[in-house]
Image (cartoon, rainbow, N blue to C red; front, side, top):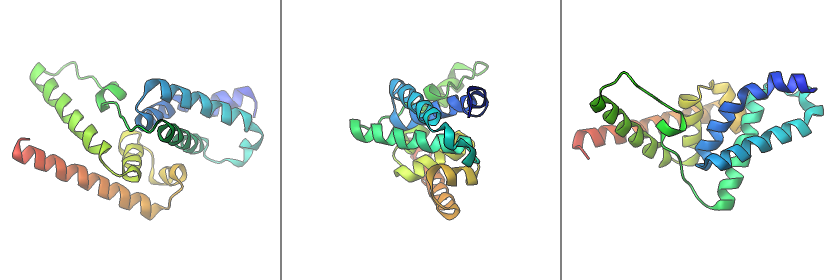
Length: 170
């Protein structure tokens, strides 16, 4: 792989890599470091790139592994609120609607953070990043049935908790 190929195949996914690393590490600085390390590893392994069919999924897998290594090393599990992590803005909403949206996003973020790790990762990759089931299989190195089961359980858990919170006003 030469530099032009690297720019065409790897650099376009840097924002997805960053968001995924940010979600896993909970720190902007750590996420930036992880993405930089991913690029270094991809560049150093450029001789084997012709064997890789889905470069984006491979980069996401490296990002996941490096992020989890950093989280384990620092022994912390923080996550940025969804609206801060993904720069969500609704400027046409009234202040009341904006406040409700902000509170809802905080609740969803908290509920996602409380999920088991595998469910949280699958839900993030599918619902936030928009990856296909096959790509999630490649990224997480699990089979299709595990992806579907984890996604189903994660969505149900978040849905049930939201319904409980909304029903009881807590």
